[in-house]
Amino acid sequence: MTEKLRYPAYDPQKYRLTEQQMIENPQTRVPVILSIDCSFSMLQKGRLQSVLGGIETFRQKMVEDIIAQDSVEVAVVSYGGTQAIVEQDFTPVTEMKIPQLEAKGETPLTDAVKLSLELLADRLSRYNANGISYYRPWLILIGDGDDQNAGRELVKVARELREMSEKKQVSVLCITVGERNDISYSSLMELSPDGQVQYLEDMKFEGFFSWLSESMKKVSNSLCGEDILYPQTSTWGELLSRES
Amino acid sequence: MKSVAVAHIGLYHLKKNIPCQDAVSTYETKEVTAIALADGAGSQRYSGEGASILVETFAKELAEDFQDYWDMEQEKLKETLYQIGMSKLNLAEYPLDEMGSTLLLCACHKDGRCLRLQIGDGVQLVTTVGTREIRSIQTGEQGEYINETVFFTADDAIFHMNVVKSHEIIPYGVTFMSDGLAESMYERQGGIVAEATFLMRDWLVDGDEAEVAEAIRYHMETMFSKKTKDDMSIAMVIVGEA
Image (cartoon, each protein chain N blue to C red):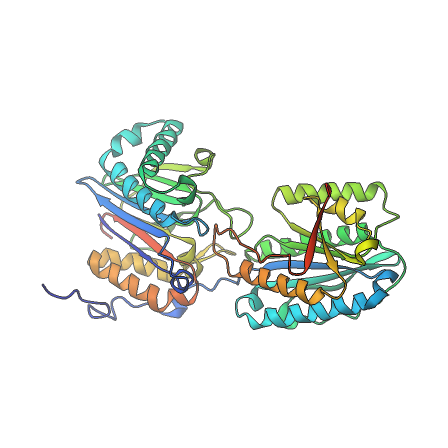
């Protein structure tokens, strides 16, 4: 039996391709919005500083992953006082700057969600215009209080989020922080499409952002049709649901 | 007519010691050549097996009974193919919901009749042999997000099947690419087809099928694998002389 010939033994010049004859498609993106409560209560026990430390941990871990660093894009929206503000538009993690957040006044959570969705819609339209494919976006809402002034607007925004979630247009993660026996999370619960809020004890932000970075690595490394098995959240959070 | 089909494992599955989940097949009769390509669902354990069952079943089925399928009204054709595919999958020893895959299928009669079917993602290209003319490009149905698509085993698979019957002027070629290979062969933004796609087709026009298969496999190993970590596959058929 003769051994089967391996290319390029046949005719290397006849069957030869170069890099220039191929196409370079852009890396698939994972858009993530961090929407962070900057009301006065976030000054308690250094919560706001802990959030910023957690974001830095997240940034560092993302940059370590060669696929995630080109894939994950993060925007930061703060909400405190009378308005929500885009602290940072979508930016690759390699270029991400940790925002300087200041605490002020109340908790305009509803405005933050509306602003986040506008930001996201703009980003996705840019992706589409440039032929960039993307994974399902993530919206992460972190807060320690309720939106006292939104009223019916909160219900309306919650319905929009629920519809988007059902259509798999966005994954929403609601995180409430504070003292275990003194947490207010009814607004976050209303906004949560699955009726679940993760309770994060003070100072466990490192754990949460480490979890987030591991999850984003899994998303950005996943293949077509692959279900993603996220790490357990029990190391940093406690699940609160409408029924509980 | 000439045909070639190659599937190659990507780095992602190689690293995880998971078999290639892309599958390809060709089948020839005196008058018809059929090619098939299926990309197994990443999250489903036996999707590679499901993909293999589908490509082998359908390449043979369409080549042998081309006239019957050509004469069939479109909805009946979809229903019949779906039933055949599902009954073959059901005979396998694996759970049906673990065998999801996309499917690209083409049967070319030597007289120019061409029957194509697609479910899920992947790129199908019809070109005029001897030129760079593109007669048709279809990129299939993908979810809004990159890791979501439609599989043959879905409850509403028939609804997502795209069937095209055409009379092609000879000579022409049909090329199928899985989304992994398409990363380096098809530019999503402008719908631009890489020169390499035409060159590989031209190899088949001028060369020996086995040689071409080896050359494609070589480039998958050494070049295309740098552009994607996914499995890669291609199936091509050319009808008539250039």
